[in-house]
Length: 395
Image (cartoon, rainbow, N blue to C red; front, side, top):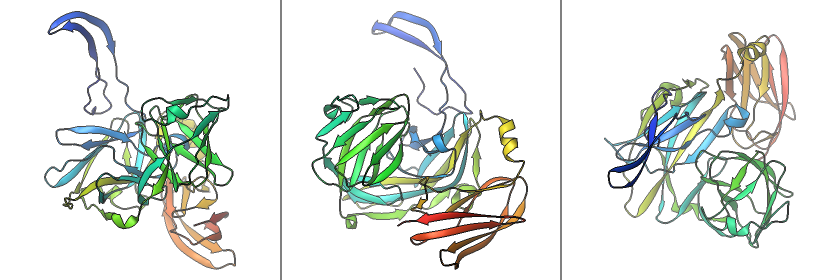
């Protein structure tokens, strides 16, 4: 048995495993003692009235990219108000986490309705009512019955397999429920292109725009489990009342997005809270946490890191990882020393649409160049030398 309360400083706790027949009469006491291994990712705990309860993992995409990501997450646990505040903890087990921004969005909506969040952070009311009529894997097996229930059966696949799920109705989005363990699954379609879905520690809703009638799931890990698949219809946004919660105890490093990071080493805990304004009694409240940052393993070899720092490199990082940007243009810059660089964004006819000078610190940082309209741009970074990147923006 494992203590459900968060561990401190990455400690492990040992418990005797006991079995008994009835009452207080012990039938057997095992001599087996098991140690708990901390989670290999930043984990969110929500205060639910009596204690902090494990909610879910954060920044799941970083498990595969080890790079900057913007994570939007609808809380699984409903936070309870204490002293007029919503209280949270982020605990890092065995990795290094770097967080630039934490926001809490309060979304009031009609009772009995579900809330989803799109990859661009937009919250929406949805009705996940369109069921699959067929789910055939690469071996010809039909998994439809497993995908019709939540927790009543799972699709099992591995890298190299695929699962084609068919619907007979149109819908705005694809809505998924997945159980642990975390894995990476690619979803592809001839009409829609492809996107990468990253599951969390606990099964949670995954929502993204999709209008086709057949979608293919491509497992990328040695074991993939898919619990429930639905097409969802978007409901009127006029039924949503959204506002940003005011921070109370929030470290300066995560109060605004400025490439100044709060670092969580293995075993560290970050505690923070937001004001809890009142809500209308006829509405229910959902909570969307926005976290900007990434985490990376402490097991990386130092020699490799030092090799990367021998020369200054410039690299643009775009989310999603392609030439298409849906959010802000973010430039990843690594340097082996402090220095000033000039960054310019030039459109296809040669006009400079963004220009700024940035003081680089030693190591890695991200430069936010803001949102751009659709089109092709060139990003130039200049110091004693220059480097240019081509970027396509589609909105």
